[in-house]
Amino acid sequence: HRANLFLVHGSPDVRANLDLAFVTRASAVAVLSSAARSADESSEVPSEQVGLADRNALVASVELEDHLPAGSVHTVVELMHESNFRFVRHAGQRAGGPHDMDSYLWPAFAAGRVFSPAMLDTLMCQTFYNPDELELLTSLLQPEASALGGEVPPWKKLGAHLLQRELPRDFVGRPYEELFAWLALHNGDVALGLYRPSGTLTAPLPYVCTNPAKNTRLVTGDRIFVLSHVSGAHTPSP
Image (cartoon, rainbow, N blue to C red; front, side, top):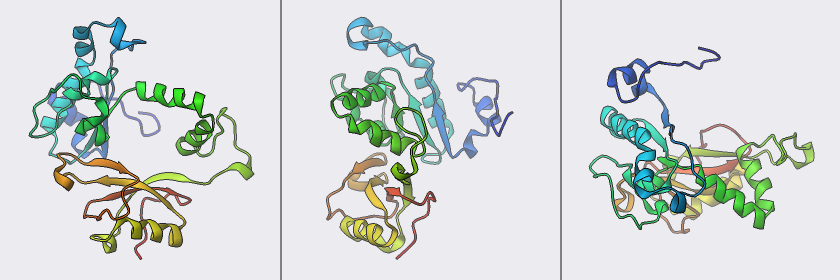
């Protein structure tokens, strides 16, 4: 290993290899696709090849789900083709579904459990029409670097960190607007949204809710996405 990076030889399809990597003790697991990416999956790649392109990552994700206790480890699966999002299942659900459903409507996507490099292409295209978005995205993803890769002058540093924090128990059952106001007034933080637990509004998986309605009732298990000048993950209680 080097700098706390350990390489374990094996296959994600073999449970003994997963145990050797202590996957059950992981804080999170990322499954990377070994598929080669095409420029345009809709017109250049036959549909049957699209379905098979991400097979290794999909098989690994199924093996992980069967091996790990439900909800114990957050798993993110990289898929080269967004149309394969529908094959990422969750406990109690059969894989597969309508071919014409938009990928961002799938529970696994809303839960932050699948990712495609095509999403970065979308962001880059948006910056062509809205150049200011590039500086904003760079500041969120890498606060200490400029959009061109150099250091940001001291007077331009936002000093903001994009964080996910636990909901203080005192806010359970209260409306979102009270949480937003308290974070802004007492911590100088800006709340961007919630990561809601499974079962909320009958959702089968946890899901991201950006800019919730001000009267949204907060529940136990909610987590907050915030922009904060403090990099810690703990939210002080009122």
